[in-house]
Length: 319
Ligand code: ADP
Image: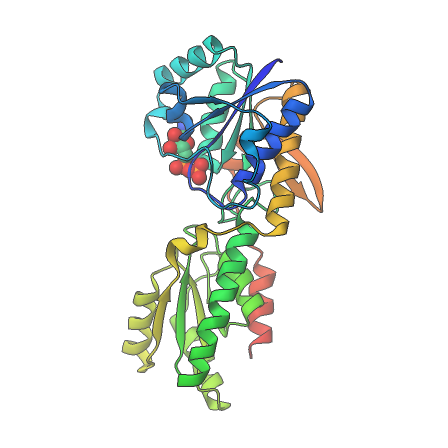
């Protein structure tokens, strides 16, 4: 292996830049040439390549987003498009590809590997929803952003004696919601992993009110329902008035935390090693503080579940 490429695909996440930097620096350290592909898989077809030097990844470790941009490119599911991508990569003299992204990106990486082009996946998504790894790049930063936002909302909630619903990201996974619930001390958390029960939410709010609390924070993962829908339900069923705050895309931005930078650096460097070891069709991950690698399909053929013990803890601590 003499030359490898790296791309970011799917939703961007803080720390992707740190991962790109790690891939580039580790590859150069190992004597490889590195190419950055811009705009995900689309960039292969459009030959949107940039030779990466040590300096090309200077001053990016602290930046959110991705220097290589990301794109959704649904055509990449087609065999003919994948075959064309492989012939372009080969023409460029590229021998292996590191894909930083989520499970959709992993599917593309696996298809290329099955067609004979070695790929390694690096988990990058704020949702933390990739099976096989306990943490993904961007999750810690998003969680901290949500926690600090809730702290601020709590200040105004306390002053005005209002209850707030905070809608956070997480289409299929409640990780951000449940971790933020514990970290910010929310009264109630609504996540996809636990059946929604409006009566339970109401009784928790009423119990808080009965013990004299005049405000509550309810966190809802967007995958269950919108914050506004939950507010309407509470009003219709129990006459409970709430304010709604939808945190939205701010959760995807910002300078990555130390934890995300270190995780991304470890993942990126390990991905290069895996390609050099001749491993393909695998993803890097972290379990019990140790780096692991496992077959890409394990990541998208099973379903991630947020840690429900944190949900229980959050409930127990906000009685
Ligand atoms: P994520 O990687 O964050 O899950 P997406 O699901 O949007 O994000 O996938 C990112 C990109 O990966 C898609 O735009 C497409 O280019 C590629 N991709 C997604 N699913 C597949 C698939 N089944 N086969 C090949 N490529 C795919």
